[in-house]
Structure formats: C-alpha cells, structure tokens
Length: 314
Image: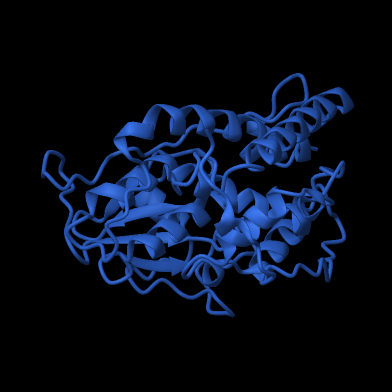
C-alpha cells in the first residue's frame, strides 16, 4: 500500500499535492497581511526538510524576536502532526491546538488535503497565511526586513534567474527526487527516480569543485534549499528510501560543502537528528513496518571543511 494513496499515480509514482494556502505578508501593506513584529507564528517540524528551510532562514535573518515558532512532535500518527511536550517539541502556546489540522480547519473548514508543515499563522485574523515553504523563504528574506537583524539578501536581483533555474532542477531531482524513489510502488519508477537523483548529485559535486557555493562565492537561497536534503541523506534517504548508490560522505565536494553550511552561524542548532530519524523510521510504517530507528550513522559534521579557500567560478 502507498504511503500517501491520494498522491500516488497509476504508474506507481508519487505526485506531491500542491500547497493550499498561498497568501503573502508584504512590508508595503499591499495585502491583508502587513509585516508586523509578533503578529505571525511559524508551526514547524525539525524532521521535515521543507519546514527546515524556514527554520534556517528565520535564524539566518535574525527574526527570532519578530516571528514566533513552535515545533510539533516528530512522530506523526493517523491524526497527523501533533503538539505535545517532549524533547525539542512542545504544546501550542498560541492557540492551544492539539493537532496542526485544527489550524487548517480554522482557515478552511472544507479542507481535505494532507496536513503539512511549515505553516505561517496570523494571530490577528486567526488563520493560515501560507503553507508554502517556497513563498515563506521569500517572505522571510525580504518582507520582514524592518525587524531582521541581518540584512543579507539570499535572493539578490542579479542572481534570481540563475537561482530559480537551479532551484527547479534540484527540487525535481533531489529535494523531491528522494521521495520519488522512496515512495515508488514499482521497480521501474524507483530506478528512474534514483538514477536521476544520483546523476544530479554527481553534477552538483562537479559544480562545487571550483566554487564555495552553488552560485559561486555568494551564499543564496539555493544553498539553503539543498541543505536540508543533504543533511538527511546519509541518515535517512540512503537506507530508508533506498537511495544507496553513494552517500554524501563519499562525495569529494558535496561532503565538505555540507559541513561548511552546517558550521555557518546558528545552523547546527536547527538540525535535530533525533527528530529526523524518529519521524521517518516511525511514521513511514509502510516502508518500515517494525518502526525500528537505526542508531547511526556517525557523521563528523564539525570537521574542518577548507572551502573558504575556493574562489568564484569563472
């Protein structure tokens, strides 16, 4: 049986549902959601790679005092993402919700899709603004600039075309590619996704040989969209999703690149391997019926990466 039957294709593939809520916070007040300190709250999971992106951007932009954050229980059951007290997760201090589904039904009582993180909640109108991690990354980067402690632009105007292009390829073949392989219900579908995944990882490894980041010497949104997949790869995707041609530690450039990003200010604190492993291995019981969580791998992410010596690509 498929992990998410309603998102399974006839050919045995996985087709991810579209984001349901895509309103925007705007600093110029052009939407019903103006940028205000303390008005918005992020509901996230440390386990989820899509939510992880928003946790990282909130940290890198220095928006912790402007936008609240609550982490759900990493073990998702038949009732969905839940707010429970435990190591690294808690009850909901904003609305007292027991389940994230309550936020969805408060926004749209007729909602029938899968309940996903991240969610940006508006405390004033008491509804979800957005559950699109793509849109939320852009909002966190630019729309809360008045409150951000770091004015670094992760989506600069002169690189937007290149960022969008590499984002698209990485999403289709890597970020979502691991799920296409892991949730495949037919051998041919799995092999196609896994082959494309490793072709793209090989390309990215070669791309990173002469340059520190995906777009040269400038860290961009593209790096932080790739990072959550790379950090989960050896611990989860390599075994659990059968993406086992190579590990990230086997790549001469992706491995030090991953350590470089991990060692960036505050990023290590956003990585919770306990949540990550318990979520995947205990939630995906169609893949792992015994729900046994592996004790490894041992990853030395604190090793010197040496990538500060690289120059921009010519």
